[in-house]
Amino acid sequence: MNQSIIQIQRLSKTFGGGSEAVHALEDINLDIRQGEIFGIIGLSGAGKSTLVRCMNLLERPTSGSVCVDGQNMTDLTEKELRLARRKITMIFQSFNLLMQRTCLKNVCFPMEISNMPREQAKKRALELLELVGLGDKAAAYPAQLSGGQKQRVAIARALATDPKVLLCDEATSALDPTTTASILGLLKDLNQQLSVTVVVITHQMSVIEDICTRVAILDGGAVAEQGDVQEIFSNPSTDAARRLVYPGGVTPAQYPAGGRTIRVAFNGGTAYQPLIASLAIDCGVKVNILGADTRNIDGKAFGTMLLGLPEDPNEAAKALSYIRAQKNVSVEEVQDSHA
Image (cartoon, rainbow, N blue to C red; front, top):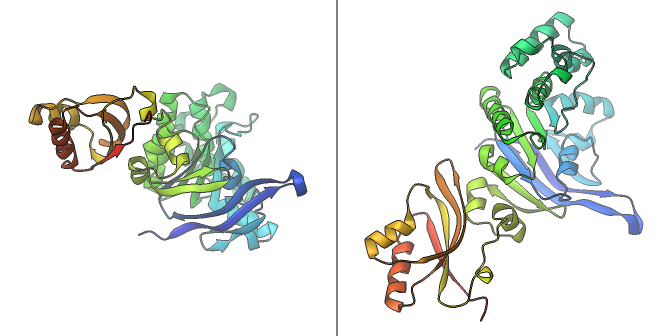
């Protein structure tokens, strides 16, 4: 198991005081491992952006500690912090490029601040633009670029100080789906090529699905749930996780009363195994699909499905027995919400 690169312990952040105090974060504990792509997700107002700004001390926590690569960030002086932030750089939804500078000079900027010799900075910047697929745009200005290209320049600039951690604060929220997919693909490639740890802050579950290995779900300024993406998708244990994983909210209350209803959870079996069709073919039993909220992650099926069993007790028992015998599937009988 990889060692931790970011350790957050008992972190809280309060804005204001007295009756006007806003508790943005409360008792956050997170362990982010070296070399992983870690997701932090929550609805608007959950505290995601405040948390990511606390990671590099752009926002100072009210209490608790943040350790990055073995350094307690909360103990550092302002001068020491400026040096430490080179290890934990950030990209934003709005790109934050300097519009009066070319792409090359935008990427050179952090190296200029750290007093790197001009020619060395230029050489490094050209290499980074090539790395993000914009080797031919060095002389272009941000106004001449598409949104996806601007974000690629921002990523190249963030990599200029050879960071160990790349923080992505809603980095794809302003982009169309195709461009989002290309930026996520780039982040995954950089994670693998450079061994840089990537922390993705987002409100989009599709982003977590695409590239993250582990995820923390924020709700009301607290961590509601955290763990492997596949585990949380297969069995979300909190209301906050269920709202994000299955926003459709498949429940028996949506359907007419009558008959026995079961909830089938798919926990990572092949997405190409047609369970319901197999049930009909192998057992001659037909069930009624009342609702489903499933998804395919790397060819594996995750999610839940509500099934109405046949009225005949023998047929219902046969269906239950067949489904329970399948790998990577769990079954529970749900109470009739109309009873």
